[in-house]
Length: 313
Image (cartoon, rainbow, N blue to C red; front, side, top):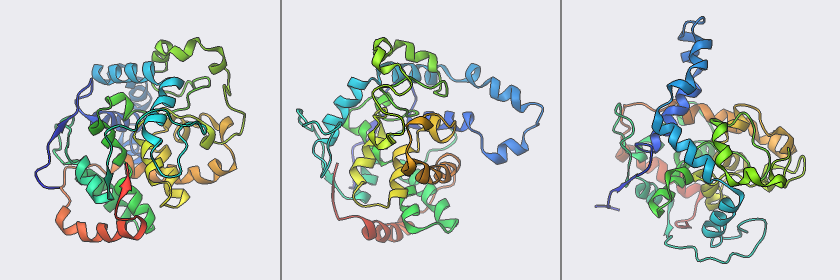
């Protein structure tokens, strides 16, 4: 994968990392909370919205406006119809061509993601693959299982959707169910007033088009890198890992406790793994560069333990 073309991210965010930087502002690490002056913490949390950068607010406005039931179903139809054993949206037969996708191995996909230019963070110039390795190495240092380490390495691979031409708001952003009433725990919830689903009564009840306790596997989530990657790798990883991949951006659920009425026993069993993964996702970013060449043999062996040489993307 030498001499790869470099792809710039365009949109209201300077790059995809800007959304993640904002998440860290919204959810400071326990260490940051302990170090802060306790008397100032309530004020700091109250001021989050006022201090959010205008480009981040614009990103959420676009995200919340466009993530409708129809949009999610169309993207599932477009991207999932060609994946092995995958029914795009509730079992319908896909009617669209999957478009300009490819077959790649996991490491090749990491190198493909590495062509994504992200200039959002002035404090670090790390490549995408280095961010992936930082997360995986932090998990490895804590003695977690090998599948957990692998999940840290690949959890953001779905961001290659940007390289397939998707706008930022269809790749990153907090995820949440569509087709039912929106939770107050959704960040910048007021922007959802611009969403066409606001005018559909069937989508505005507590359970909407779902049944209470139906399980998140039967719920349409906003479209993005989490849902896409889950379907690409779903046949190869333990269920704990799949929950971590699919729901790591579902902050209204695993951080705020929203949408519990849609969850079933399996969700309640596996969501602690999503919560266990979240600190690695949010708090392992640093300017220290991992040695990609030195680490590559270990991670190539780890990838080969779980995945075939190529996957359909």
